[in-house]
Image 1 (cartoon, rainbow, N blue to C red):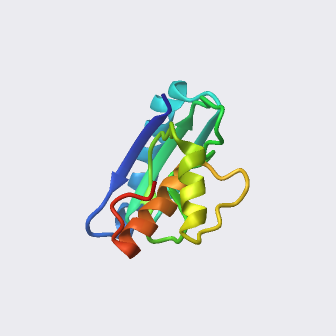
Image 2: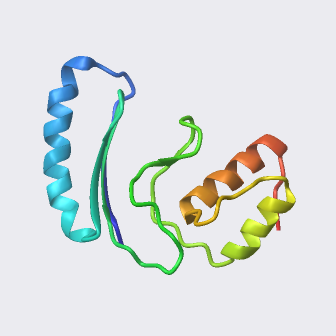
Length: 124
């Protein structure tokens, strides 16, 4: 399983940026063994994350986390879709256009957006 660490601040303050970066460096080192395939750090105004990737395949996985399609909704986590092709086909039937090589994380975000916008409870 990949490794995750993060700091989320309800109220963003600029004076904690250096402290958060230092803490994220320590956390990234602590989780590095969890994912030998990649180690990523992301800093946002009110959130910082470290992610160490363990590739489990065969489906494409996001090399960097958190994942977003629109900059508004984010996903952080290992995802494995058992009915991946059926879900892609269903998204296409709903008028969406998943790109070739889409990751499981991106499929989940597309499905979430569809469910949120249409109120569909099931798409396949």
